[in-house]
Length: 430
Image (cartoon, rainbow, N blue to C red; front, side):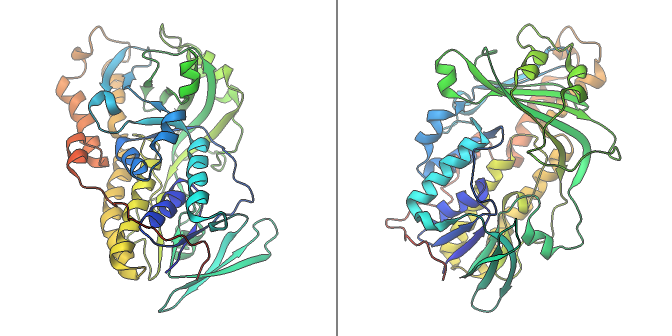
């Protein structure tokens, strides 16, 4: 009962490893011909790190990632609004990891090849078409560069983990159109610089219409007294403002955003200095999609950004993809590689992720920064004069509950998928 997975990103590889742990064969097909450690930094929240730990990946992650100690919100003037401990410092049993996205993907890829077999990860194969019947799914793959047919695979289920421009989703919902842009543009880069604040801090400064985010992503660098800092500069325009199509590989232009951040030199962080210090800058419009009424259609389903792309607010995208993979693998182990398993997976994950998509559209826990901008645009003497402790604490706690990483609830929850004694090794589709 092989599961065919389209997409070797974080969600697709987490699903493959989880299925293997559950004793279920899986094969991953990826459009690109060679996987490279591309991208910039991301965060993995404790509920996702728990799942990766239960996959036996903790040590590999800990060797390269930063175990984030605190999250701090600041005004556009650098004044502190809210600070809270994170991960182990907040009493979680699992850390919050800040890590380079490409490094995380390579850790997952290496583990998948080692456990499932090298032939279980098939590159240069773009999902082009499929048919399903009462017994399974036949998927057809092409070379995306030439359009030539390269492989046909037969399996029990087909999972689209192929990102925000998912081929599977596009065929299931042909009238959906492109992703929805909210008017915000993100410029992202990585800069080596001196550590700031605790050395393991994640900061956000500004407000809804202009914001800067920064956090270190390299433990080896920090151990040498330096910081490899992932940063995001954000500006928000009108939603009808003309801009270019989203693409993580598009080079950013400093002249389009650096002037607006030139005055953001705080006594604890030099924002324009960080921006200028990056070797490369990437530009990306902040987009998502409306939640779908259903992900699963017979023996087909969606996962990760293919199912629920969300704004990068609250550090949730990658974490939710990992959780998708764990829940789907559990459902297949319990109900077999059947439509019933996909229905059980969707019944749990679709409502949960839809709530996060909607919350992120409302600015999530970062709304406190916008409230400060509205109430005290010229700065403040004490944050208590602007926001009450109840407003600050309530926003943080509510989002943790919504996103599934409330500490006490996470500790009380049993494992999503307990390891099996002897997982099946299989690399070939049925």
